[in-house]
Image 1 (cartoon, rainbow, N blue to C red):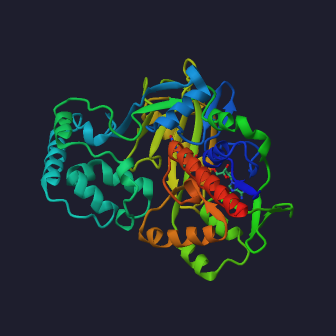
Image 2: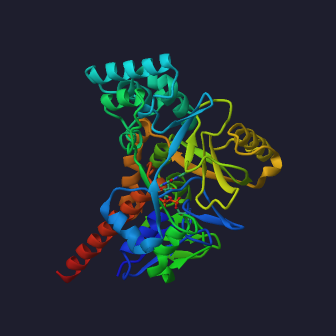
Image 3: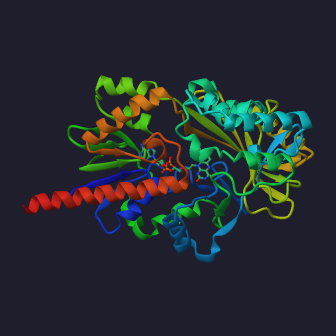
Length: 433
Ligand SMILES: Cc1cc2nc3c(=O)[nH]c(=O)nc-3n(C[C@H](O)[C@H](O)[C@H](O)COP(=O)(O)OP(=O)(O)OC[C@H]3O[C@@H](n4cnc5c(N)ncnc54)[C@H](O)[C@@H]3O)c2cc1C
């Protein structure tokens, strides 16, 4: 029997493990708990996550799986997100909720959207171009350009748009017109309905691992990989042999850990870009916007691109998350972020004074969003196929260097497990012949 090792117990690794349950495998996780980015920290009576982590999904297998894990205890509701613009909260998505804009801006948005949707579509050459072609100048200038520039940091012309179709909803021109005339267009976007477990998002990975938890070793970090000997080296020097390695370690870290990788692979990975996220978690004493889950902030007066509310408000105590995009090696000044957070929450009239922030912490997510560009498109397949030739399946949001939700990570884990089972089956057949 081949030795299967799964590196990482985030949603993808756990899904691989769940779909391989019953087989012999080992899962190695560097942290002392499962979940990766989908973890929660209990602070008093509240659960704080690694930024807003709400489950959404359309795949029936995934939804049934969620129900089987949580039964009736999983909360489900219609997402309510907004955009803060000129002091007003405009329902998300912006492009389908234009009625609150000043007349001229609204007119430009509708006119340009309709014009662009009737023009013969040319193929977009980059992300900025894709936005202009699909939404027209008005909506781009009013929201999509400022928000995406703040979020992605890199110039929008330098990005590509493979990920956009599921992430950025394109309404019908009739919906845009209706919205400008005052109708609220519901159900657009990739997450119109969201689910959230009692006890924070961290409950999700804890439940997935239930049926195979004895196969996971926690608190062990993979530091090196010897491809020739097919051995993983842990931080204390212990070696672990593998026949198949399924890795959810961020791709750049995986390449760094390989002993003497070919120079072509070092070169191919050298230009892969990504951005980091700073999450400022807080528990505040104040008021909130009833039923709003989160608010996008395209404006420049604050570094935060989004602020929102974790479920589980208790009276006037509210758990809040706020997120900032940064370049990977940027210096983080905690005090400055605290003051920026105070300014943001006060401007939103959620709190009045600093003492209303009862708890504050900063979490840095080093690998948060990978950058889609022509470099990635050209070099990623080379890197992944080099790894596959060496019996490593690099998968998950950061292993496959992709933009994946928890649903997609879970489904990818299932797909990988099925591939591995197919491979084992083939090998068994060959041995019998
Ligand atoms: C700010 C933010 C907000 C998000 N919000 C949402 C949301 O609302 N809804 C949604 O569906 N998705 C959301 N996502 C995406 C979601 O977090 C991911 O899709 C999912 O968690 C990815 O899981 P993964 O297992 O692929 O990766 P990870 O969670 O990164 O898991 C990788 C695991 O590998 C471990 N590991 C790494 N290196 C080593 C090593 N050397 N040795 C051993 N173990 C190692 C890590 O500790 C980790 O446990 C969000 C992401 C971000 C960044």
